[in-house]
Image 1 (spheres, one colour):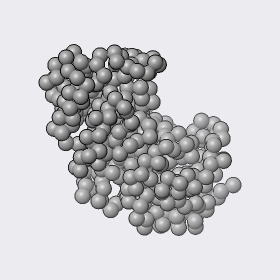
Image 2: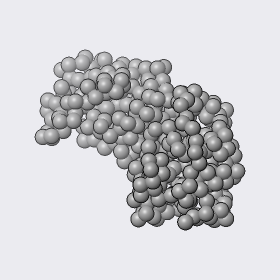
Image 3: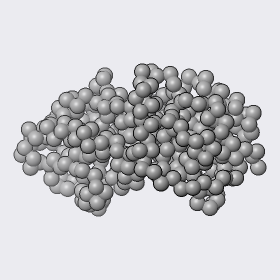
Image 4: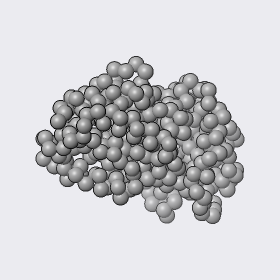
Length: 170
Length: 193
């Protein structure tokens, strides 16, 4: 099985292929290696957002200007963005690609985050948000491809699409 | 009580910003705007995403960076309170083309007139604290002057216009949001830099 750094690097390789012009991002210790790479890219305008629903609004606005963008966040923020994602990009048919880090599983160090994180795949499914999953059991060479294809899938289906990445393991 | 109603303020706004892309908050304001001046291709009607218009406008403004045309967000006091943290991101990014117009009637007018926390909140000071220029208006003369200032601004600016609670009776807007937004999106495509 792969290491967390290898998985992060595979995600970074996917972002490099996507070539987003803008990346709004929420803070995440799990995503630190990826976020560190993002902020060092001179061709990517990355910036912190205060809440996930705000990020959804920004992503939808960017989509209307055809600006390639990726939202990076953690799954424990999914509860924050549900109303925004269903009433804005989903309702108006706007592509919105979300790279979402899984928490609350094997190797987790927070004693309560699993209470939201374990439920997020079911929550996204209930909201009819197409989601792809990557974890330590996924062959490493599938990680980069899935990130890139997930982004493309959001564009061609004109809707929010999430790739959930379990960088911590499983 | 302020002289102008929401409909009055919307009429003046469309007179002074006739072609600029505008993000219009929620159903009641959308319906009053349409009842007052009709549908405009440059208006994006936000039907049910309370608190999101500033973020939507920010996304468009960032996506059109370098395009001198202003992007205007029309928000209510209740809506701004729900999404107020987006002002910090606006101040952080400082898009030079973003105007935020807050029509402040101190109430949740759409849900029966319950008071909002705007009765004790100074939106102009909040904006300034986030690094956004702010200007107050409470009658037609000061509103026109504030909008002129917004048009000339070289950075993000928030105009807080105090309005009264009068509203006009309008029918529900039951159109498909995809069809409703199509003219606006086509306009953005036509006016890309």
